[in-house]
Image 1 (cartoon, rainbow, N blue to C red):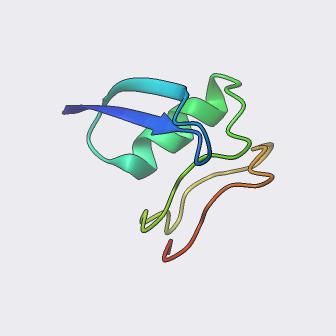
Image 2 (cartoon, rainbow, N blue to C red; image 1 turned 45 degrees about the vertical axis):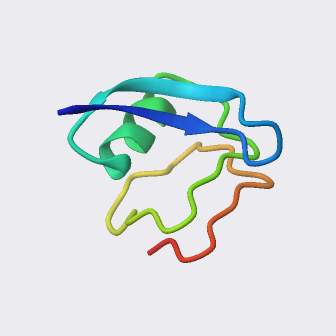
Length: 66
């Protein structure tokens, strides 16, 4: 596991951080915890199969995300 931070794409503010195996796991944990991922930078993240139900990803950078 490694420390993963999900940051806002425009101002680099940390939206969520935690110890996870990968970004997909971190995003799922953030959503489950109720974190607001609005504007998150998820560029290039492999989110294949991620449960993003109820996620607020408005304005998120998903360029290259799977």
